[in-house]
Amino acid sequence: MDAFFASVEQALNPELRGKALIIGGEKTDLRGVVSTASYEARKFGVHSAMPLSEAIRRCPHGIFMRGNFERYREASATVRRILETVSPIVQMASIDEAYVDVTGSQRLLGGDDAIATHLKDRIREETGLTCTIAITPNKLVSKIASDEAKPDGYLRLADKDVEGFMRPLPLKKIPGIGPRTRESLESLRIFTAGELADQPPARLLRVFGPAAHGLQQRARGISTSAVEPYSPPKSISRETTFEQDLRDWERIERVLLYLAERASHTLREQKMECRRVSLKVRYADFQTPSFAATLADPTALDNEILAALRTLLPKAQARRAPVRLIGVTLGNLRFNQHQLALFERKDAEKWGRVLESIDDIRGKHGFNVIRSANTMGLGRKVELATPSLSR
Image (cartoon, rainbow, N blue to C red):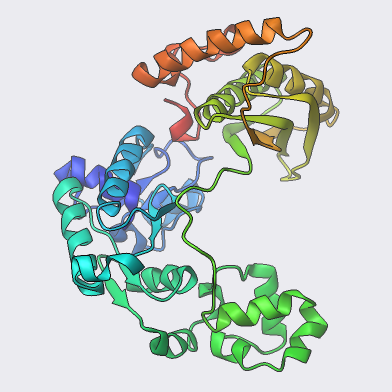
């Protein structure tokens, strides 16, 4: 999808069309970051993950909004439903990006060009949004090609076209080659995919070891990764940056517990349990340690996850420094086995039934319609720098 969050807002409010629109926070939210910028804002150098303060400096006339994650999720669900009209094999890579295996749809729908036209037309008709489509031999090349064809574009590459497409690309365009790897490659005077593909394997092995083969495969546009309709999450995280660095650990703890409740709610939505709970804290000097606890039994219950977090808090408080960011990660996930509770698990069963009822109500009326006493000190309406967590 093209500038997805911003495009959804522009589709809902035509007065925003053609304007420099930045989603991620209002002008007063100086500690936030840009989630999405419209193409009109990108002309001024605004991009996702940029601090809002820098976005304001570059585009002071822009319209800044916190956005509405529920609207974006609804639009994403509509797009997914449209994608499933051409193939049942759809993998949502994120809320605004998907892979679709159209191998078996060629004869039925009339080939690649007809499939792309059908999807672009249906998405525009039903959502008012534009998208960019790339149809290529594999997911890696499709990812790169769709980025290159944006916005509102379409690019089709056959097997014979891949090498010529890949060779001139700078290394930063290749997924899986991060800043540190790119720095190491550039120190070897390797700057493009073609130069990486042409390197003697032995030279790369000396620097990158076993990873060298994968680097060259990516540079050549070779990938065997299948389109997976569902891939269970490996972890569930929620975090937020404070508008000002805080020393008030009472408020920090309340925000942390609120984030934990959001994370455990998502855990139950996924019908999963966690075995590991991690606390992340970023101090004012940007040092970012994490502290973890392993649970005796897998759980999706708020009270057990919050109890684990409280054992970790003293470790974070030991450093007497202002806190910039706080977060929680639920890891070591597995699907809920619904095993019969043994020994002293009757309380857990009761809590499970209570939370099931609460989740049903939240599903109808929103997460914040029911909150625990732990977080009521944040007020009736939670206001965080992370827009999707404030609703």
